[in-house]
Image (cartoon, rainbow, N blue to C red):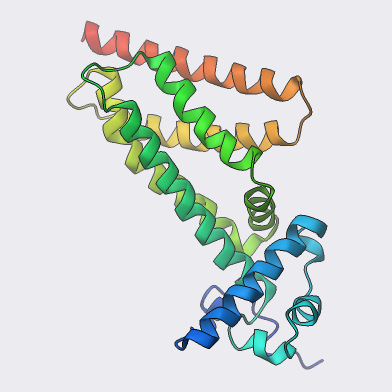
Length: 223
């Protein structure tokens, strides 16, 4: 059976790249397509996202969508990349605010501040949660989450050393990777639960992080 070379591209990251808009009119059209796709994902979930329905709601020919987004994976990828950029900015701002004072904050305060900021982004924004779920459900997009975990871990190295009162430490990158990964997993699980279990899970996650960090801080003092 012959397949459509444009539509059967989900497995190839290179094929996820469509033509980039250059004129203002084209950029507005792309933004409208993305806004409609996002709305549909919130309403129906990513698995039900259909290019024809996006075209219908946008009032454009389906070919107009395919020239910018060869597949629905390409649309979800663009939305996911935008949301991950917002999360990175949120974490940078949260860390800056946390370390802005003259004294290093207690580890418990730092954990509360950062975990709450991260969790609230997805808890309070159904659009962000829908995009996150969509990227997780698409095997061709899971590397985005893995790349983001590595990027977040690299960013957290310096703040962790500051909180632990250590100028350097060979194990900090491994610890940072673990914190990034398990915090994402804990948030995904918590957001699938109802209260009060949701809040209990987040509280337990914070307690685990605090215990681990306090232990490493104590080892650093003893070294």
